[in-house]
Image 1 (cartoon, rainbow, N blue to C red):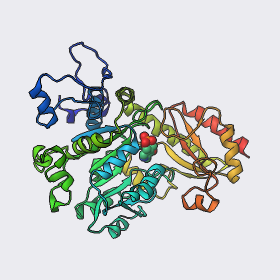
Image 2 (image 1 turned 180 degrees about the vertical axis):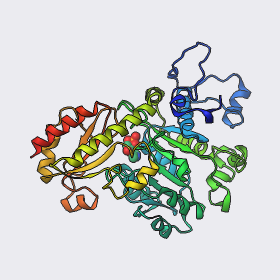
Image 3 (image 1 turned 90 degrees about the vertical axis):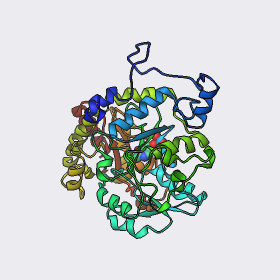
Image 4 (image 1 turned 60 degrees about the vertical axis):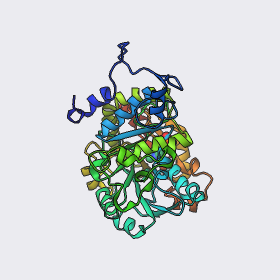
Length: 432
Ligand SMILES: *Cc1c(COP(=O)(O)O)cnc(C)c1O
């Protein structure tokens, strides 16, 4: 069957898997570190990339491979590679093509882990991250110079729920011959197609809505496959002979420039994953595959519940403001409606009247909602950033980081919307 013709629900259940000789209908968990070679020639061919196959689970694994193929199919992408976590995926996506002395240009309203990685850790390796206000593509353009290697942003900001002009940012990147990498964790297919807005490489924390049940860590990099890496000889990591593989030219070997080419994800696997080893466990790949099977249905329900909860909060007298791009009051509402027809995800912030003290009381009063630091579990999650994630910062630093004292972040789950709303209502009453 031609996967291009199949809908997301079908792909989520079938893509990438053909039952083996045992007839096992579920994807088997291959808990093995290594694989038998058929003979000496087979082994030599595998090592020199002349033949595809399995050598060692740090590089690939049959269970993980099904998950990677399914992830690629859901995006209609040319390839995907899985990693141990979302942070590993982001680190690999960036460092595969950015070296010491070079820079990347990124939106400044990032996931906290990414912010720290870019601002502090990459700096120690000589890579500069240039942070710009992502609300205007011109800001990205102004920061690009001859040492820029990629443009980076996120599909929907968390917890501001901002939706930027993603096609505009992609256009700027492409005009300068740069790939646009987008963290699409909060908006997976079918909520959002990153490649339709001009993104070249999508990164995901599979830990969140794709796994979907708060049980396994994982990350993924998916590539569209039509970026011209050879133009301007800017990416020798991908297009010049590879000294770590006896001078093989990966770009030519994979047919780069003549049709969809998974060179980026291949290079992540045989480069960064081989050399630094943040490999996903096959068991986690299995758990994430279980989640993926129902991703399209769950994602729709997450969005539907989020809209109901946001509408409830917006009318509540104890709520000062709601930052959900599905509400007409949000500055990015119109763009969000065009970009995310099913709804702009299920993670957003709201302000509770009464500041820090009210926030603390609210959090201590929820019963159904879970108070923890995660997003997009099947269960509804809440957190009060001023007393937790940003509790070590001064009130001034918190404000600079976009964390006002009254902010509550919610990740709306799959419970009955009426039950989530009733729990929030009673907790708001206790916050007074
Ligand atoms: C959680 C998250 C990450 C990091 O993923 P981990 O799997 O926790 O390493 C990156 N980006 C976004 C938007 C996230 O929500």
